[in-house]
Image (cartoon, rainbow, N blue to C red; front, side, top):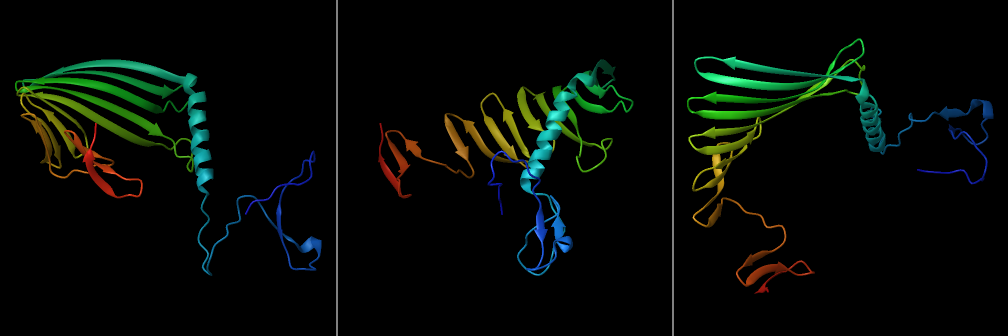
Amino acid sequence: MTFSNAQANIRICTAVLIAYTGTDASKWIEIKKGSLKLEKGNAATDWTPAPEDVDSAISALDDKTIANATALEQRLSTQILQSQEQIQQTVTEQYFTKDETNRLIQEVSTAFTQTAEGWQMDFNKLVSVVNANQASTDSEFQNWSKYIRFVDGNIILGQVQNPIILTIKNDRISFAQSGQEVAYLSNSELTITDARITHSLRIGYFGWVPRANGSLDLKKVS
């Protein structure tokens, strides 16, 4: 339910008042902003913010993060570790707050690891997300880890905790999901376990093209 002031050039304070007909004005019940929720049924639920309020809070948090960007301290570090099995080089960039908390806000790093079988590059990003419903000192860390591996002449692309992996071989480009190959390109042919075409399918000069009424036609196309 929405309403607006019909009187122009007059600034008023909008409020919602509840009372029975004839109730004395001193006994009216005032509903303050953010405390009223209309529900259907006879069982009330806990108060929850409206979606637009959540979006507004997220936007305000983003603006605050950008405004405080100049108050961050950047730290760079490099590290080389060597063992009998491998050599690893790591470059890390970190951002900390300059206040007394000295909290880690973001960390980005790349690591190059070489072994007798091949070598691997890892790309890691660690971001601190402040929860607006908790104290400003609380934070939740989200980690994204991606990698490129060169093993036995093959290139393997993937992301940690993502079941999809792309493997590029000398004669085959393969897509695997949860360890099973679901599609590959080889010998001028593309083989797919399951395919979904969102609009049209063309084979040579013919194509399956949807009509405006939703039906599907097989016709010659230019």
